[in-house]
Image (cartoon, rainbow, N blue to C red; front, side, top):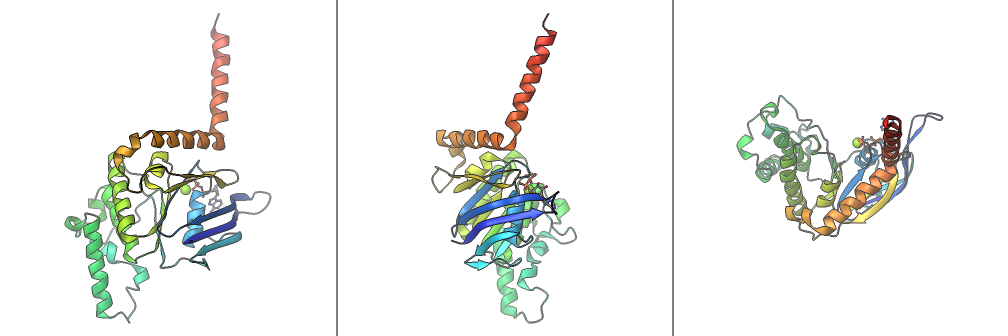
Amino acid sequence: MKIECKNVWKFFGEVPKQTTALQDVSLGIADNEFITLVGASGCGKSTLLRTLAGLETHSRGELLVDAKAITGPGQDRAMVFQHYSLYPWLSVSQNIRFCRQLGAHTQNRSSADVEAASGRADALLQLMGLTASAGAYPNQLSGGMQQRVAIARALMGKPQILLMDEPFGALDAQTREVMHDLILHVHRLERTTIVFVTHDVEEAIYLGHRVVLMAPRPGRIDSIYDVPLPARREQDMKLAPEFTRLKRQLLDRIRETSGMKTDLEQLQRLSQAADVRTTP
Ligand SMILES: Nc1ncnc2c1ncn2[C@@H]1O[C@H](COP(=O)(O)OP(=O)(O)OP(=O)(O)O)[C@@H](O)[C@H]1O
Ligand SMILES: [Mg+2]
């Protein structure tokens, strides 16, 4: 297993106002697996991702990467957020090269290191279709292009694990489709293990080998689904019966676990009561 979560708990705040953001979460993720996390708002998706990134400590349990405990951020893991978090004063190419993990500012880098890094930056620019925009600044780019830069920058340090928190959440539907095929291509090429958080069930199925459905209050894993599609994904597969069946199943389960179903039922009852009152 590349990543192992064993009975992980995370609490925020103190009793009696304590939030259980993660309740007894256990999950093993294989090397080179693409895992997607879905679930209602507040179910702990970002918390789980942030603890894997080492940006947040967990309260109980074990979190392991390559059988070693996670004690903080590391070069083996990179994170991509919904908001592109690029440096506005640096060009595309400089944003990608500006990689703290590579020790860009340390004195003892050999010229071979610099050359290798530069070659990788160029390769990533090409992979992301950014070569023509290398000299542009973030405010001159569309949202999709900015997110490509953010992904290229995350890949710069050759992470073995890519942690993505709703990275395409702010993009329009067409751009998202392009980004989906791009990230699948990156996954094949770089052989990274990817943990990808999304609100979008279709995105979760299209990208994931497995979909992990989380539920809120307390945040926990509700169920895990194997995606019954060939490893090599194509947009047409979204029309396949097994795709729509799984989508329906996931949406129903999210509705059931989020309390949304009861809200809808209550609304229905209210409108029926109103109908009764208004009918003479
Ligand atoms: N720093 C924090 N301090 C206190 N509570 C927090 C903190 N971060 C998260 N929480 C709480 O933990 C729970 C899980 O939050 P988290 O952000 O992980 O959910 P999420 O699944 O990512 O939600 P969303 O889909 O809205 O992004 C929520 O109840 C949230 O209010
Ligand atoms: Mg979140």
